[in-house]
Length: 573
Image 1: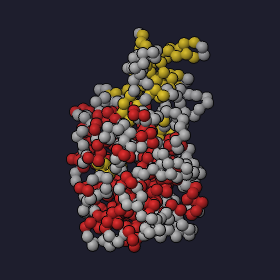
Image 2: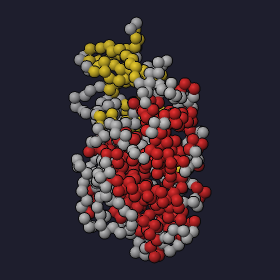
Image 3: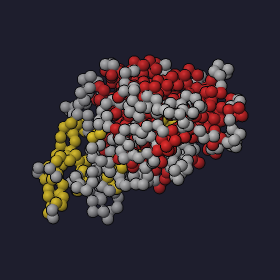
Image 4: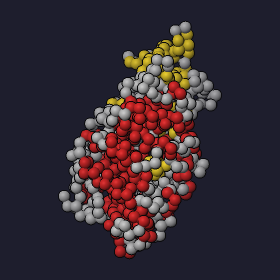
């Protein structure tokens, strides 16, 4: 179908008026490739404008606060997974992503699409306006443009289309490789991926003159290669290509930050960071930041918590440094009857809701073991807290298995969590504040969100090796991540010490889950491996298992796009 794509025909001048990047403002009717892109400095303005567009708040569909590409992307990529617990109702459209109840007119859906294609359009102006090989400085800028174009296409195709592993011929997204927007069609998923690979390969070949001393706020050769390793991994059948690309990079285990608990607050200054969306103190979004949703400190909303199944994984080893980013809030108000007492929480059925809240009570002990007493039908009933052995979960024992707890209640086994002291909770969900997106320069809600880091490269290699049957190599990389997290000795993996796991790939995927939690990976990691998403844990999300083939996994194509270009909507909307 021939028609203009609504979001990429905005005048280039509208992309460059960002104070946060100290970019000069030009009237939109004077900004064109002849005026602006006649020098490397002009191209630098455009590329820096692309970086700014990733973080700027936009007034779109009557909203501005919190309306930025990076906020929406990090939430839309993470919240449909099983790492988070949304603790209550909210008017923020992030809730719709969490519940898989998206519509085509939500601000997060429309803004992500709109800004994403603006970034792609700007990148194309640079690619079209400069010849390769004229200078190292120009090649660097062209390479950054290819990186941004490839990265944003990759973000969008994974959210608005089916996973690549479900078929190359499925409908993808509009593919933009020039500033010509006269025709808009949805390319296939395979076509989009092929172009992303070409773009990132080209970016890596061109970027040999890094700007600003290689700051991770700007794209670099290693960032392009690292992103390419992720793309190949997502393709499912390109595991050897993953390994080959990583061989072009420095050894990734040598780039892991030794001071993990302080890494994310200082990501722009740490070698582990390959690419981050840089924010300054002046760009602290406070209550509309990513961190505000995860952490109630400093006036944040603190409504998104770490999920029970994720905590079960972490708590296998309490000395895991990754737990430093997850802080349980313990009740200190002595007026609360359970303050300071041991308690048990477990989710119970409700006739009115399709999600589950917790029931909680004090833990007591008799000759038969730990139990709790709850009110049922006007009388007090005793329920024992039972233990069960499982693989790949919670407290390790000598047999290499782990222990979880459950309470028989309402005719079913309800998985339970025990607390030594009564936790603060919201709507019965214990407050596990997450701090990966805060405390930059001491501000609780300020961060420079990391989109790519060396730890992921290590885990990309581990997953590729696991799928190729190179189990020892895969476990070596897993152990490098675990050692950086402060684990050692029998806490590491080996062929004879699998900690209850039955295959190496499951080890790698759980390690990815713990290491990359809340960073926008989990949704894709589950579905691209043709696994179902088990969300049967406490939270306001529906109590369900989502099949990896379910139509609702794809986000809807925005209404404002379809109303102009006429491209087809995704199934189920």
